[in-house]
Image (cartoon, rainbow, N blue to C red; front, side, top):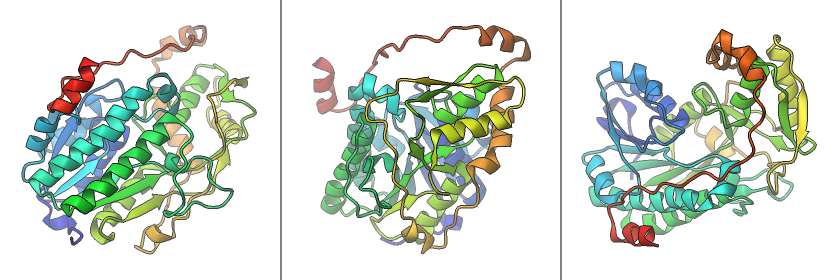
Length: 356
């Protein structure tokens, strides 16, 4: 199937469109697809926020449907007449995945399977599936290319790898065009405070020590959400059918260095670093080979260092001035198991799972 011309797209569906990544995708596609109307499908779990879509809703070109991507009947209805689907709905917090791995399997793997089935029913021309570089695990001490083995070392990465395997099997069976993006750690506004950078920035803003797992030498790569959105559009317009693309910016940096950068950016109040026990198998991540994406004309423009001042201001502004002193005195909470709530699904498979 052919790639799409952004000027000619009429209907786009974005799953998870009220979350961090999804809402930025909605804003970006509104700006670059002048004829398109966008349908957002979101379950509105803890990581979603209607305010993320305030500007998009004012455009008059966005509608919202609350619901679970695992609901086959609902998803099939939402995809009616769609030219493009962007699948951003996912459980994405690695640490939380160790507490509730079953929720990650349902949302990320089986939810993707349901979406692909609905795509086949509606004959949607193109879907962009947002996977993760976590599918590579700690890698093999060399840059990971798209053909590198998938060796996830946590439940989140495993659920995203499973989703990719389901896509591979179904695209061949139904003649679909599903292009996969594997980004590194994305940074930007609107991100849930459970993620590394928002957590560091907000803790530093109230004078709390930044919790660094282990020795802090685990290396991670970061990518601005703006560069990611540009990559997505590049793959929509120029990507190959059913191709997979790594998406990464600058070279990996260790977590302790990230903490130091945050402390240098957030000048007042002063905070320090505390070393804490981390999650299992919290190893460094390999750099990604992004030559396939660069061959399409894409190039990362932002950087972690360059984005930090603006992000520090944005996340700091979320904390009321009068609350800063009180928040600085709040003790850390003990880890708790998150209660899983499974919504009613639209297929016999999921009703069977719920009974068990």
